[in-house]
Image 1 (cartoon, helix red, strand yellow):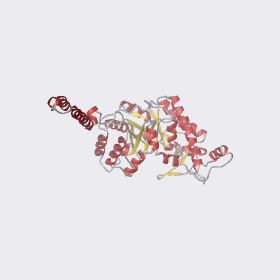
Image 2 (tube, one colour):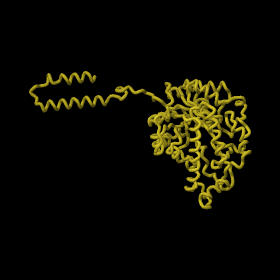
Image 3 (cartoon, rainbow, N blue to C red):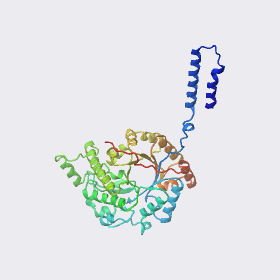
Length: 420
């Protein structure tokens, strides 16, 4: 069409009435060029440069956990699940490795401190599920990033809590139980040197002994802001504040900031230890939006990102209300992080008693793609198609529509430079 139009323009002067003035001829030529430009700009962009319909690379992840899920407890089931994820064009898995006060892999560090080298669940006996996941996952081309799910948290009745009561932190009233759903939890004190060393040793053990692609933390690498009133932490605060005790108001800005900064300092130490062990091990964090993470868990991921001590951010936005979901994609700190490191979005695929329809999942994925995030990850494996009001075949077909073709996991470290 354009070629024909241009030919017409070239031949136009030959039949143009020669009696018209040169001024009129110039006007027509200018008008012709304007029409050509308008037509070219009106064509779809992909018609001009043939852009692909799907991202060149995209994080397509899912979290694997032993909570409300049996995926990890039988070798063939685990292998089949990884096979299915590969067939549906997922490319990243986040298997839990620290949960319920135990490691999910054989750990010399855990054996020494807790008294057990691995979670005692029968389905894990005699196995190293992390090695299985790494081996099978890599065979399928999946990126494997172990998830340090419980962070500083532990069940109140766990061996860890019973054997190391001095490691636990408290509220101002002396209580220590924190409810998580129906479960009683306690929290290791992230400010105690012994606790920090234990957690760091677990992390380094994983990084050193397994061919993993990265390791991931979340809000549990912080501390519920109502805690921190144990004798050790109070004494440390007084030492750094000329004898002044911390505020009884756990939301006091200075008291919140002091504890958050201590956790940031430890996060920096962990980052350094990981890189000293394996330079190309990606350090990933999957927190809630900044306001919630900071106010409720003292996890200042915005500062971590600014300091360059995380290399990948997967923001948990588990919202049913689409307007709220979109609003949280557009917070200033999220946009700032996207200019610095790859940022993906965690989307809720469902919970044990909360089914999320496929249409909602597909819509949220599209909103994420519209805003050029690095990708998406789903919480959690069992709710992809086994915990839903929709049939498993329907759910899998829905994910096939989201990921119609294979797409490589993005090289998250390429071109990344920390702020000076």
